Image (cartoon, rainbow, N blue to C red):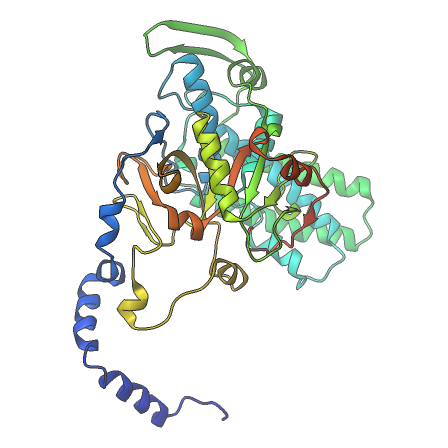
Length: 438
């Protein structure tokens, strides 16, 4: 058979390795210590000290536990920083479970509509397969959290606290995805049999009621109103009775989420253009996901401006690359795997995105930056993995890691130039569901 891996070829491969006398030494080190420990660059730690020329006081970190809700946690971090500064409640926390609940309901509603809209396509259709592969995942974008907040408001964490199923979403996610895929069969069959639009929408509402029931059982019942009771850092007591989640947001947070732009660095596509990602919108009629695509240096300049103004920054990144979780280190030169294995492993950022090596796998919060002679050298990062990682939950990120693995930052409109605002307000170019930014 053509190109079959023959014994002769295998013998040649073995012989080439045996001729490299350094391989046994490296082999012993890697087998005993693992790839990361054996390839760690000891020079990185010395430059990643935890002193920052600009640093926000943001209190204790949160903990998303065994869930993919980082995008919710980072959004709630930004909002609680606003609240904490205004009302002097340093370690206040909003309910991530509340946002998670409504995202499950809204995302199920969106899924049903997409299934109905695409019912005439073959099952092998790439877009349809994208939705069926992950009907209601944990992951998300900043605009998705913003859409939920704009429609449902927020509540304090003690009003709707974490549950077993928010701390570990595995069991509920499996049950919900099974339910949604089964419902997809039913809706497609109804459409194929010629069901009317009214019949399809009636069935959709029935199915959505079942999703609401499942989510209520697993996560809890979201409050329609509550009493807001707290003590500030000066131990002064406050209470505000019978307030709704939207009233609470307007009164105590008041951040206009439409006053922000998601600025991205996606060098696999043209810069200075606006893109949208309709395949990941989660609220019908709600905030849409858009990206203002700019060169990386623009992202850094915008981030510095916002930190100088005293506001933290939501950012999307690929935290699984060049990261030491225990010590909270992020540096593009942290692990020298190319030197360890003696092979070339370099790719440009655009190449990583085009060839599926890149992944916007996580969202965190920028809370500081170190400027040396006016240039960024390292960044302070608030993570949502609890206090046991990094320095009480805070990571330090080298500037080269920002270049290579930061893809999105959320910036106030007032920091954008006139030209950038014009692009941000233009008609976006829709991206495919399988774009790297998804």
